[in-house]
Length: 373
Image 1 (cartoon, one colour):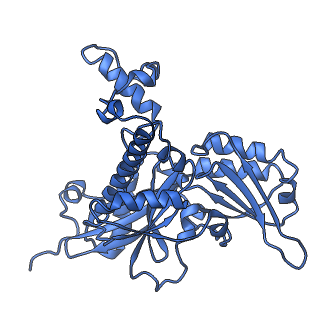
Image 2 (cartoon, rainbow, N blue to C red):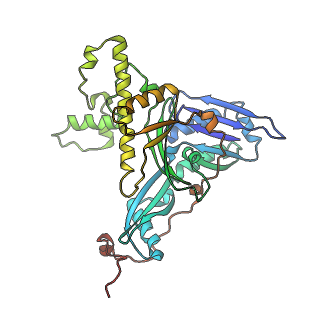
């Protein structure tokens, strides 16, 4: 049985394909809140397990769990080009420096690229506690989970030779959307927007920015700084969160919002929302077109409702930088794919430092340089 946490539409889906012993089974549960935090996921799973349909999970010898992509993170480190047997030690040391609580994470890495002077190491990580707690929610209810992976894994292949070209995939649901960048059998980036179709097509709400949508903590912080700019009050979470989000940054409304009326105003708001959304997509694509990535992405595969795709294409006509390609598939079709176990979640902890490192030489990029004859 597949257990699919669909953060895009605030749903959890159970699905089993028919076989010789069992009939096909499908059940979908909607939630009135976004599934974008561990607490929200845990709450939704608790509610799911109280339903009669969830009892089908206990009948299965093994189940597969598909988590949303916000449980996993990615990064890239630039290192001097070291001897191969030393590179991993230095890389893991850099990881420990950046993540003092490194043993709290699942962690995996690979060499991304190198030249005579430097090497780039790509890594991905996930917080152990959050993933393990979700798994324990099922285990304590007598449900065995054999395979665990994340949504973006559905867009990669196991074919090791299929890595010639990078692919960008934009997925837009009702409540969330994300841009996935993959190449062959590896996902290199997942950019989560935090909003989707409902916000973009809301003709009553003008989207001031495509970033940090409804980020109440950021708004409270801006309000705190505005009100306490010249004071000596300590900048602490307790004081920041006491500031109401609506007292944070304020935006000057464009004159069109005052002058336009009814249907024309509604069209203007929707066009604005998609223009800002498109601008953010192009900014992400531009970032990955440069060093060290060099991903020449001009075509974006899109999984989205037809109305959303139409507005995206319209927004792209102004600069013609990107071409959107409709994948013509639904979430239901996408979720028919097999959920394969993610190797990341099987990784052990990062080992302690095995060699002493000359940090002065390391930070000055001297380590690994060939000695002059």
